[in-house]
Image 1 (cartoon, helix red, strand yellow):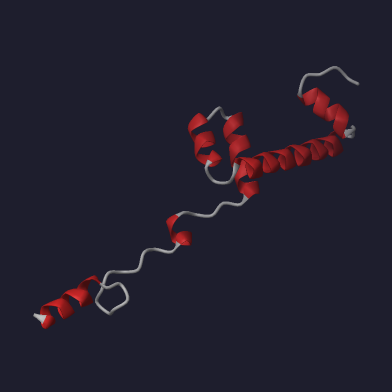
Image 2 (tube, rainbow, N blue to C red):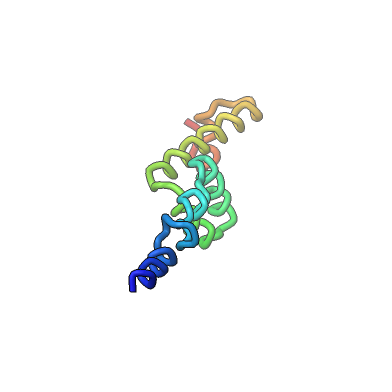
Length: 102
């Protein structure tokens, strides 16, 4: 009788050789996404009107982190366009939004 329990313990015990495999570590379950990667993917999905992709990306990072990343992307894009066009960031931002010149 004891041998039966001993054999059963070996089969179901995760810590013993021959037991159940250890559960996968967290990093193997889901790819970790950087907030800037999430922001870039989210904004490009918005530009392409890809709602499914936007929904997927929304789960990659917290809403606050995604908002921060989108804001940072917008700032960098406006600065890059302003340099390219030889204009101020404010005039480029207003132009992109269709607002009258200030």
